[in-house]
Image 1 (cartoon, one colour):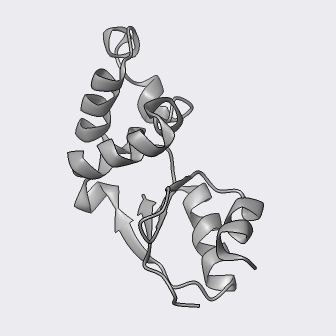
Image 2 (cartoon, helix red, strand yellow; image 1 turned 135 degrees about the horizontal axis):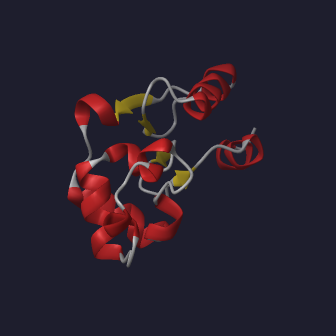
Image 3 (cartoon, one colour; image 1 turned 180 degrees about the horizontal axis):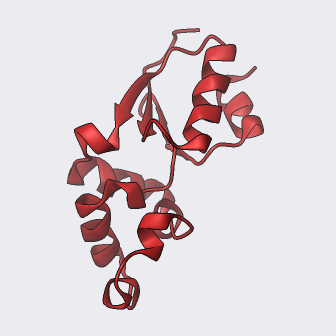
Amino acid sequence: MKTRSVTIYGIPNCDTMKKARAWLAAHDVEATFHDYKTDGIDRTRLERWIGAVGWEVLLNRAGTTFRKLSDADKQGLSEKKAIALMLKQPSLIKRPVLEIGSGKPLVGFKPETYAAAFKV
């Protein structure tokens, strides 16, 4: 099913990433993996995602990286501050982010959302 360009963004050891990648493989969806830890993330892409889904959706407040932030970093969060934090520490970006062609990115993993996106 290689009809569109598919890229999955995240980190390799994340359990949710493993589930998403396994789902893609099980449904014969070829996806390029972009590792935040080794490849980082660029501002233009991050801002495009935020324009599509909102920074509140993209910022992973449930993870260890967010919990380890200083109180000063956690307080008064705004789009500008969230972008700066996510650029500095890409692990703050919710995982996975799935880009299918030039459409709206899918954030997080839900099998039913992926099934709808790939019409399986």
